[in-house]
Amino acid sequence: MTQRETRNRAVRRAYARSAEIAGPPDLSADPRVSFRRTASSAQLVMLTLLAVINALTALAFIGWLLLPVHVPGPGVMGFGGWRLGLARVSFCVVICVESIRLVQNFAVWVFVSAMESSGDFKPARKTCFPSAA
Image (cartoon, rainbow, N blue to C red; front, side):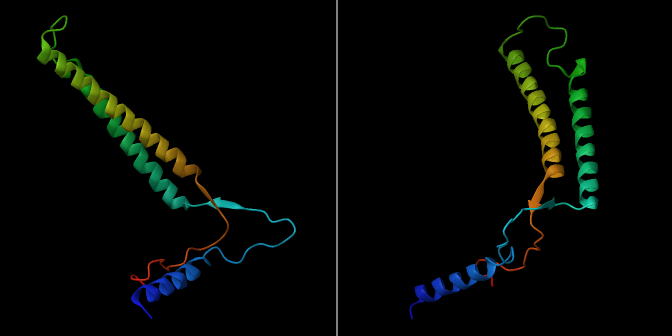
């Protein structure tokens, strides 16, 4: 038996063991899929706490950046030269990036809070990789 055949057999065995994670198929006349939360209540509370802290930090930082003293070239009317123009564009980019990060933080919180999984299976602690087995 070659090394390739041995590796292929090991991979097939690992796949066969991993394919049983969800349990036996439901062959009843009316099979239904039930959904359950993937995160526990404690995990959701911790996620909410971290999301609120992150949002407050982002809002404080954006507010701090928007103070008039932090805007490049205070008191200069008009374009003010290419360096000042570049500084102002860069400043606006930083504000936009921080705003996007704030929205992304909220989106991750919404998606994780609403995430559900089908079935009542418990993931096995097996791996599909024969070298790690």
